[in-house]
Length: 432
Image (cartoon, rainbow, N blue to C red; front, top):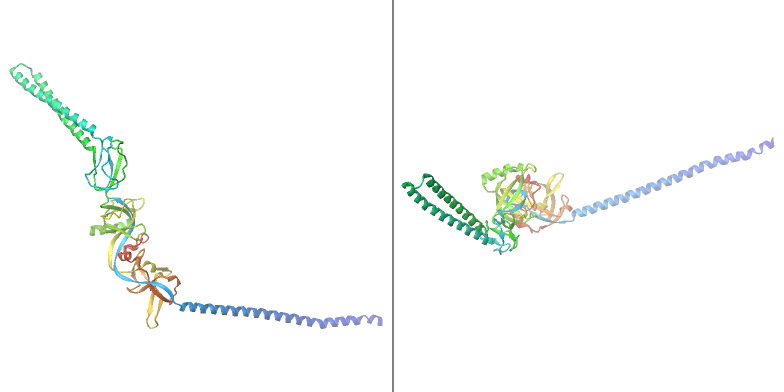
């Protein structure tokens, strides 16, 4: 029995040892978990605190920026007479253009003009060798003299035959034949006179005169060349004063133009350069074409300009402003002040607080009547004299404190004319 019980003691001891060691390991794990959770929570709290401090610093910096004045340039809204007009692209065209050709053939003699000079109507510009045509004229005159002599002889003979016929010497047939010969000579004389007129015309055509007043172009044929009648271009003459500008308008704008043209007879038209900033000339609308182009849905119109300073040149592209109305008290602001957003068009208005001696910016919605490049006409939203921001608006927020300075008026003259800018994208607005 002792032999069997002896080994039970260490088993019991081992079981007891295992029973006491298990709770100790569990407590160690619990402590480790608690420490890990505490460390993670502390790290999260520190991150949150840092984020809050950074947000507070950003807010403080933003507040400081809000309180820091932003430099801007401003311009005052003006109330003054302004035109309302339609815009289009136009091409300058000579009022009259003549391509000079020879009406007779022959050798071209030295020309009588200087390339590029102004010529008057009827002025001699070229001469074709007239000697062959002078000879033809002399020949025609000789033929006429010959036939006139024959007619005179036939008339004398006819008188003699009449006397002989009365005496019964010659027959009636002989008298009639002699009278017919006399008629043939009379017909030949008329033909000779026509030949003389033709020869005189051809001789006159040897001297080429300018058919219009205008500027003569570059010589197309040099002296000494043989000219072929009605086929050789000698020179081109263009009339510059006056000069015409052709442009097109959509067919939906044509009725109001024709109505105004019928009422006012002459609608003012201004021509501007390709940049649509500098006015080149002023003229008037002459007429519109008698049909609409079905391929483009537009109608061609013709404007006439005096062009006394010759600022317009043939085939030059210009921007045309067709003035439909002159608004006497238009509210005008620089186009640089106009902003666009979800609320529509607006401007930044600068209000001055005399008590605080500060200037603040605010958003003011506006209604645009006509936007034309550097100037914009408003139908409402502002009053004359209010300052609007034209430079620096991208840094503004409502209530922003600003330091305002007057904008440079380098285009003041153009803006004052009310016809500056390119309005090709706002024709509907131009009809206000």
